[in-house]
Length: 259
Image (cartoon, rainbow, N blue to C red; front, side, top):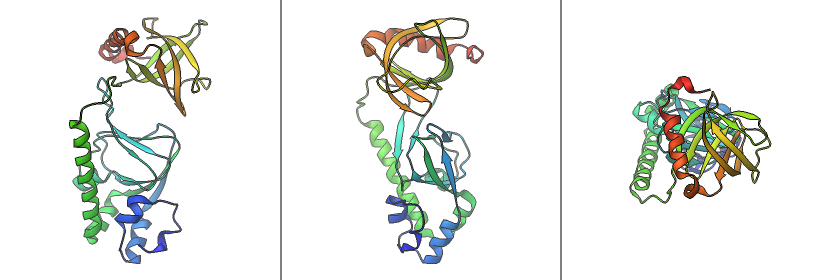
């Protein structure tokens, strides 16, 4: 491919090296003229499962995770994407709604190519459409292999996505969002700034009205923006049954019980 796209941000991999390879300069210019830049905060949703397809994305800076996020079911991490990677091609070509969630991992910059002009471009340049379809087939095959392979994770994370209240040892309360919960830990959003990696945290997880569900001691293992992952001391062996009971309450009580 010509160096005419060198004025663009440094985006390599499939986008530059494969998708547009060999196209005339005018065709590359036409393709790039259809892009717009989008910026996302850590953990911000780029699109959700069921959203109508609105085009193709290319990662410019940062990273993106594609995953399932069905409340009450294990989270399936479908794909991690780095600068230069394309995503959203399957829905663009098939005309179906988005199949999974896409979230930014840290501050992320994307280029978005709107669906209608993109489909016109693909109609005129069948080679690019073929390359996108090949990418989609490869990704489907890769995911199928992952699904049929023996699982190496004994402690699946269950999507919760609801407000909870944490009671702290000093008597204070924190209203946060519980993103997911497993026997060995939890992921919270909207947590205090003091929750940094390697910080010890003790709390009783509860609901509005003072109902207590789960008492744990743990350590913050990672932090991205307002999102933090907490590992429970003792893991599944210590908290397994209590977590199972807490999940039952969190997932079966009416939505009106959420904070």
